[in-house]
Length: 411
Image 1 (cartoon, rainbow, N blue to C red):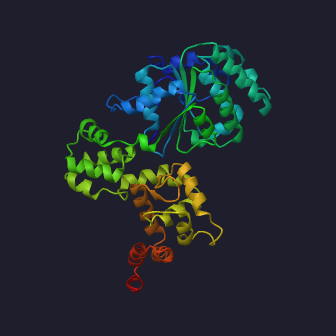
Image 2: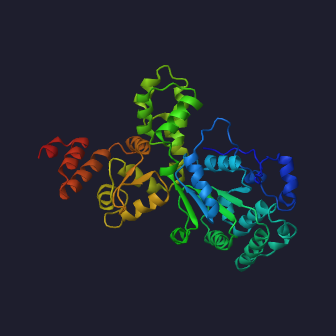
Image 3: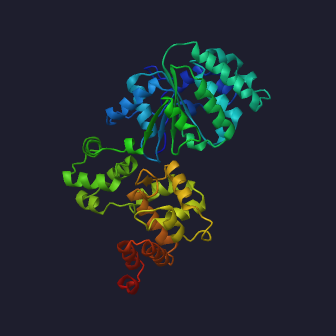
């Protein structure tokens, strides 16, 4: 969901107004013309449900260097961390990233400005640091910053939101160098829709990483009940709550969108019974927040494999109609989609079989029907042939029927 601005990035228990923000960061708009709202923490709504199990995970991050919150759009990453910072009173800085931050010098300007209140020694030198700065000098800038951070012994968390928008190798290297040299009592939190190209396994082995994923972020049955009935004022029965859990799989954005519709629905039970990814709110959200941001070949892969309840690399290669057979590496694409947190769920520890989130699959199938109606039958027939060749007769029959080839299904 979109991010609001309201609280000052340095959260020590009280929020600052934008006017106070300008005084705290005097160099921001006077000499470097940075956007002040990139430093604001998203405000905490008064009716948010508490999530102690996730708070415990985040609290554990105060013993680690990196807190990684990686999940698809609409899983409440920013909301979770902003609420945790507010409730714990942990001193923090917030930096919302955008595509422009792939410029290393611009990224460092924002980074140092965000941290200026906790590392005041760098404040007076900010304008001079970037006069003709070259990549080789960026390391010196980070060394100066970490020395300043080490001068205080207080816990501190720097949050970088929307980190998936960063793809510059230089910026990624700057962030990793910062991680490697942060003092033990200073922590970095990355909020992202896809795993960053950082050596996460190395950090995990060193016990320097807290890793929070969609599986942990999704609402539990109790949290769904608390949100829909208590926060949104609905009176869903146990049966309807169970149905919403099954359909949404705890995906927070879909629950919010569904709740908005249910508040104006005359028959809530009928709405729940009919609720799918083809609902216009769900369609609009996924199209705007997910599909429009992907390359065309990725969208085609997603749409054409959405006819499959379960997907593996060889099956996807046999089905899709994007590139000549033999060129596509379906397994590599599925692994990449998983790393991108693109609503792809692994079904085994070997990462051979996957499925799409149910509502996401509904959206993909709907778009496939709209954009390639004549291709549907052929996709099902290709899937049927693959299943038959691999001895999975029941699945072969189902896809033959779905593709309208009853004679093949009978054979």
